[in-house]
Structures are given as C-alpha cells and as structure tokens.
Length: 243
Image: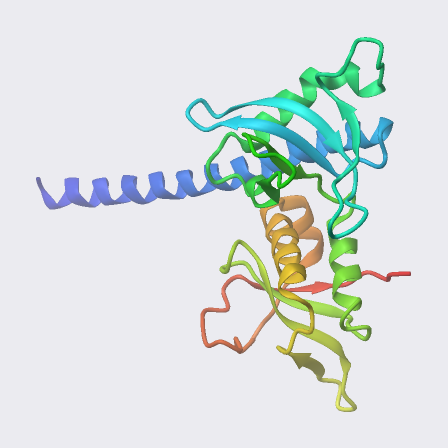
C-alpha cells in the first residue's frame, strides 16, 4: 500500500469513528425521547404512575408488558398496581387504549444495549420470575436534580458535573459565593449512596439529551478537576429555584 493510500485509509477510519460516535449519541437521545413521550402519555391518564412492569427476553430484545405501578408506600411495602395489561375485560382503564404503544415504546427505548434508559431498570423484587421495573422519568429532570441536591445542601446554587464518569456525575456542589466573589465549592456531598445513584442517572440523561444539555450545561474555563482527570466534559449546571 502506498503512503497516499495509507493516509486516505486513516482519514476514512477517523471519519467512520466520528460517525459511529455521533450515531451512538443520537441513538441515546432518541431512546430517552421515546421514553419521555410514552411517559407523558401514561401520566396524562394515570398521574400516579411511577413504574412500568414487563418481562424482557434478551435473545430477541423484546418484552411483554405486564402492568403500571405506583410509588412504594413504605420500605417493606409493595408498589400498588394501577393498571394490569392482562386484566379482565370488564376492568376498563384509559391505559387500555395505549397498551400496544406502551409496550412498543418501552421496547424501543430499551432495544440498544447502550441505551441510558437501562439505568432506570431493575428487577421486580415482588416477583420471582422474569419481571422488571422501569422507573418513569420525572417531567423535569433538572428540577428533580435541584430538589435532591438541596435536600442535603440547602444553600446549593449549582453543581459541577463530569460527563466522562458514568455518563454524567456530580463532582462538586456550589454553595453560593465567598466575599471575594469566588464560588464556594465542596466535594463533600452529603447525600446517600441511593441518592447518588438517582442523581447520576439524571445527570447522565441530561448529558445524553442535546436540548437539555445545551440549555442547562455550561462550559467551565480554567477548571481544575478535583480528582486530577481531564476537564474536557466538565460542565456547570445552575440549579433552578425549588419550593
């Protein structure tokens, strides 16, 4: 192979890698957009909906829709069933009309192995069989992040997030400004491991959705990463007011 041919091949390989990376970014955003779409339709007729229960078949990447559940009322309690896809014909419910769309859209959102929607899926502890729960996303992810952060850091005005870790993770909390105008930063996050997992999922989804990322994630210049790694994907997310 001539040097010119090698150079041309290298250029094409780089272009192919860039296109594949862009395809993956679009695919992740699409999965979350589909999930948001069906979540809005579910909650329009069933506002208390929190989970969708289903059986998943990994060999075919398909699923069977079981039911829609509400929030767990106590640590030892089960999630109340709000609608059963396999219920009796006389048990009419508005979700009956969109059952096929729920099944299709959830399947679409979970079809790619790298779909960020999988971060919201866990086994249904109330069932011994092939039963999984997908937690429906909040209507406003950024507001939900603000609520969770301020539950532990009441003075928080913003968070610094890193898109390199787990798709997106909070690395510092901004608690106002000092007398010299500099930001008061802390890496001592006070929330629990469970809360950290929820925040990581939400921040990862915000990074994966171009509209949300463009609106809420601002570039930071001359930032020194507290853990000494690259700051290429570090962003500032200002927290909106909370009640």
